[in-house]
Image (tube, rainbow, N blue to C red; front, side, top):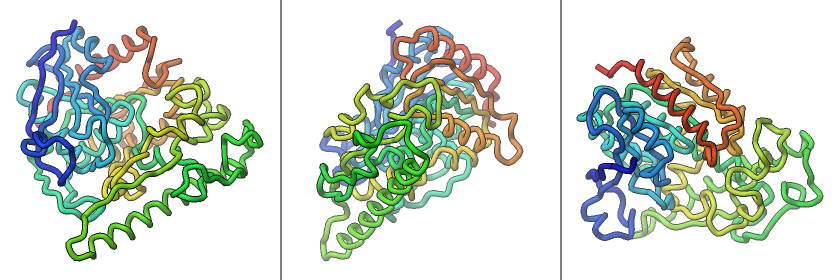
Length: 381
């Protein structure tokens, strides 16, 4: 089944040079693909801050099950260097307005990095708090811009881009200007540091990762203040963050154990990815760093989902190479907070990898669970 409707939605203009396309700056738009029924009882949106979900593997199974699924992209698709999370939820709001006109009930699918985005969106849709970005730039969002969803389905959900990058930062970097600088005593890829790692080594690495994240954020804020204090100075600037794929759990399977294989979720050689030219958070603007990668980001998944009230379907992929049991527990605790344990429906998808590549039977199981759960949702009044 490949019959899909191309969805083109106008969105609020963002920052200057948010895109290199003059047409996009003149009339900002986002794009999606709607599979399955065009109107009806149940619709859903699957979205990610930067990945292209217009051909997500759930599109056809959902369509065959009678659910209209909109694979929606934000304006930052394929390029997170200038991503502002506060703007991304406005893009999702445009998609929700579109789906609300066509379906009685609409839920959000928070897959991978979309988990924190959808949680952030729903939290603000239920109680709007945002007036600016972490860089202090005003952003005008009205309650009607963010129609609330009727539920959220989380699967392979990262806790948020800020914590994901912190946990992936190479703790051994000693000079942010030198991609080869390293302290061997903190290098998880150094031959002298072989798994299973000692508890002391892991604690030192984690502390150094946090310290590195904090140092970068402090520099970003200082640099931004300096630039904006200059007469006619620039409002933003580009930056590079080297070596961002060094979570100890990629190589030591005894830490936060599940059914995963070593290497993370992007191949068997995490060290090569760590030093590669294209990896998580490699290129960024100062303002984007604060909004998505710094620990001052407002788009933390568990923090936001604890602010929501809608039902949550929570699926754990037990062979996920980048979403570990500790994250699953944190999501569940946040969902069940404030005495609302009954709003979480939880299932473990045994042996499921992050992308469910080559696992059609597990894709079918995920679809069945989503469809059964969605039929119980009540449309928001």
